[in-house]
Image (cartoon, rainbow, N blue to C red; front, side, top):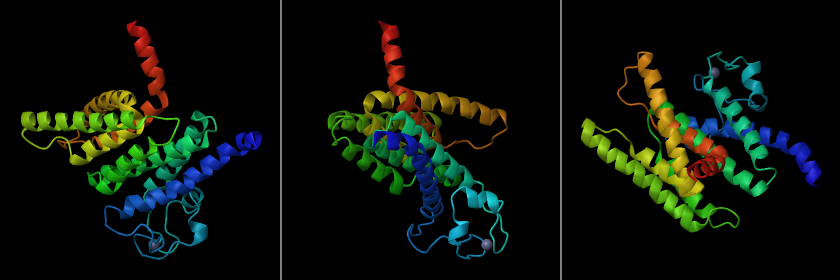
Length: 259
Ligand SMILES: [Zn+2]
């Protein structure tokens, strides 16, 4: 059994990731437009023709059709391909990271898929919908009830710390800049991340997120960006994924360094 799992596991993880990425694309398009994510079946955003099953194969169909609708030749956003490939790679990465521990793998990929959907919506619409952040917070808290991982207390403290830190930054930022600096979605997302990874890894995630955010902001300004606000959700999500992968090692290195 273990040998079989080792052999087919990475392939199954990659395929499952691509299929999940395809579903994530449906959510990314429909959730901000307040459409059902179940019905109707996928259709072209230009001509509304239903997508045939053989044109709906993750990754392959986009490449074979060169990013165009078969019916009207309207161009389909490269976001579809990027999200599918990213989800497939994340699934594969977390399969390797967890060494075949199926339950931890499932929890991790549900978490990163929700982050992926949230980030893509945030980049396009500048908002992190409650439909993503609130269920993710509940998911993180419930996952801590399962044996072997975080304790429910660590999860609760993580949620409180995530929400609290971001709320504090929002209050200070609003007072200093006299305008909204941090959205409510960022506060809820940080709480959800804290609930899933616990307060220790959360601190690593926030640290990475702020470093990435500062670097990203500088690059944006250097490139002549004019927007006063840059969505923070993508940096927070990137920090969360990196902390999930490297957080434990970083923490041990840091505490060893202090000694
Ligand atoms: Zn079309």
